[in-house]
Length: 403
Image (tube, rainbow, N blue to C red):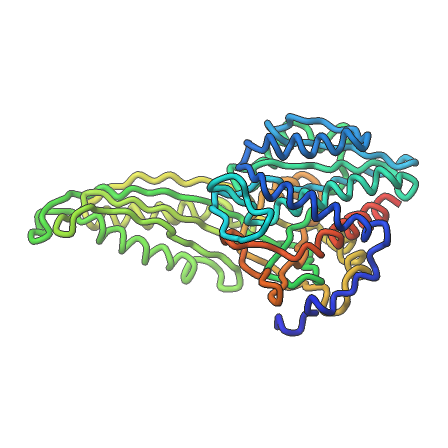
């Protein structure tokens, strides 16, 4: 299916207005400056100062220090009207960059490996353009620069500190540069786009002993193996096969010596699903399985289970708004990709629980240029042509929603 999408050589930029196209070198420059100085969640001091300096330079009203490092810029049109929010995350990941580029990370062990530097540059470009063209829209646009999307999550504390009020936000949009789609495409759909994510950590408490005398022990490794296998039956036999869900054990640690049966084993993992009605189900079912298996082997357990982010669910009307303007920016019909769900998660979901909105994917891969590594890879990078396309789509959404 991917082969039917337009290649980078066929991307048509004629629908991007000239004054946004003229911003492209600056968008690239901002993105690369941010890329060189990545910061982890709630530590985005340099990034926040960079954003605030630009907003102040352009005379855009803004508030800093929200949820530690977050910023909200407020831009008003020439006429009263609705309030639309645009959200951009700005944190990086604890990854050592392997790209050999002039703008590679200067911060050891930290990297913009998910495109948030691009999201911030697109939001800055949108803010600048709107501030220069207040005659083109009514009402108010609030641009939210959010910390800590990669964890532990900055959306919820920003909402709790009032970013959606004064004035009250009526709808919200946001984008994610997406290397699962080629540049020149947009992934947008109503309903569920990204999955909820819940986490668990479990310690199995057995009884250690000599590897040659297992009858004297309670083998925590064997118990863990039975639990890991049993967890997969939740998806196979407890969840409606028409629903999408996944349980993954990503960590397992036990033992230190080859001939010693370990008395404890520690595992951790994630649960992901789209249907919000499944909230609360997996935690109960996982504990039932762990408790039953431990009892049958004579072991005990210590389980911690918590919800991280709910699913990203797009409002049908706002998704249609994004789709309608994206259709005018990218080549159709293959430029719009409706089947773009992913089991990845995003705390944009908290904004979408609070107000109607749409989160969409902006294709950013260019395999011909070696820009197709997946997100969170140490060589992740993207085709910067997408930056101007992102500004154009955001601006058109504002002009149409706030008309």
